[in-house]
Each structure stands twice: as C-alpha cells, then as structure tokens.
Image (tube, rainbow, N blue to C red; front, side):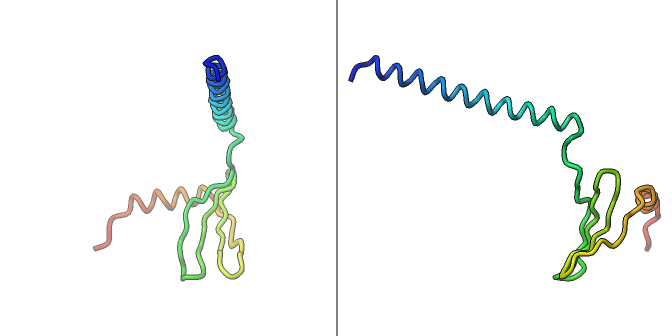
Length: 100
C-alpha cells in the first residue's frame, strides 16, 4: 500500500466529517429560526398537583388558554381557566400578609 492511498482516505474522511458538522449546524440554525417565528411548541404544563397516588390535577396552557385536567383512571377536562383570574389570584397571594 502506498502513502498516496492513505492520504486520499484521510482527505475523504475529513471532507465527510466537515460535511456532517455543517449539516448539524444548519439544522440547529433552522430550528432556532423556526422557534423565533413563534411556530414552536404551543402546549406547556404550568403546574401539577398530586391528589393521591393515582390521581393528579394538571394545569396546561394551550396557546393563550389554560385548562385544568384531572388525570387518573379516567382523564377529564375539569375546566377552562380564565387567565386574568389566575393572574389576579397570584398577585393577591403575593401581597397577602403571612398568617401567624
């Protein structure tokens, strides 16, 4: 085997690795651009509360709406929550004096 064959194999390997690095960078760049445009995820778990070992309440945000879900043996949408009411309740709980 000649040295020329090893040089060609090394150059080919370097080109392939460089190509893969460029592809990964391009995919990451496009994902960031997509998220900046607001086409990212619309669902978000805001809060969870375990009621017992089998059931839990989950507050889920879908776009601008909040939904209260009861998850357990059967999954149920309990209510659609008014976001302004939850904001007011959070502000009131922060301003309340501690109970002694």
